Image (cartoon, rainbow, N blue to C red):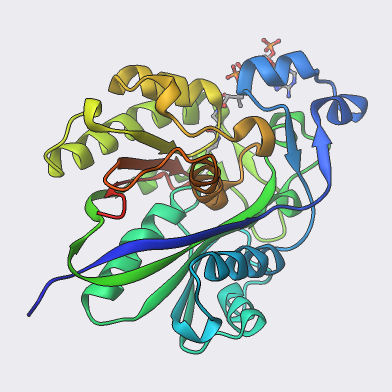
Length: 310
Ligand code: COA
């Protein structure tokens, strides 16, 4: 059987119009702009909307950016932890909203969801699928207790999407690493009808370790080292986590895509939001090595190395 890989073609995002600054939160919570900026790197976040609506807008933009029509897409793969409802899958609403023929399914790997989705899309391509619209979208504001300062200051809403296109040959995804440890599921939880809870300190401690290990495995499988990484696209949970990961991997912080200051933690959406920002800023050239890496509830972690447009 001939080898089929993937290339990423087209990117789009959608964020709610409503900007909530640290000062806005300080008006109702016992917190401050200084604490939030120093401890997390977040200055403001976007709040509002539902996951399907954000995903539809981001998806439409990605398809347009790729120069394609909705009818050119074969599968909608939506990574989210905040589906509109438990049933049906939110991807079905996205499929109908954009007018895409073919399959649709949701994937929940918490904040690692987009990278899990990228690897899944590559697997679909390998067995003969057509183009996949891969979306990471979240309406985390719907599951946050806005009276709980420990969570409210961290999260935001948004969506990012890419078109994943099958190509003959190995394609752009040159290695990946996925992992989970369900014995740590109590660290980050949200029950039916409940609010997000997080043991922030423990998540922080473990996040740096699992991301560094996962990224190193992916780089080693690709036959690369940290010095080969042109752009690190990390999950945006805390600027201090990103800085610690950069330092331990030996990747200068200037090579990281960072949007947490504007959007906060948007879970599955944060990696595609950061990737889109880097693409629009002209920070990615053909042949560049991109390292996407994230972690989240589960715990889960995921890394992927791409040779862009390779
Ligand atoms: N505003 C002001 N003070 C706050 C606060 C807030 N929003 N939240 C907590 N505090 C207080 C605490 O009560 C504590 O006070 P004390 O020293 O009097 O006890 C102090 O600030 C320090 O709290 P601590 O929890 O030790 O802060 P931290 O440096 O660990 O930062 C997080 C907290 C949540 C920002 C950090 O732990 C974190 O980012 N964790 C990982 C988050 C993450 O990755 N989540 C996503 C997973 S996908």
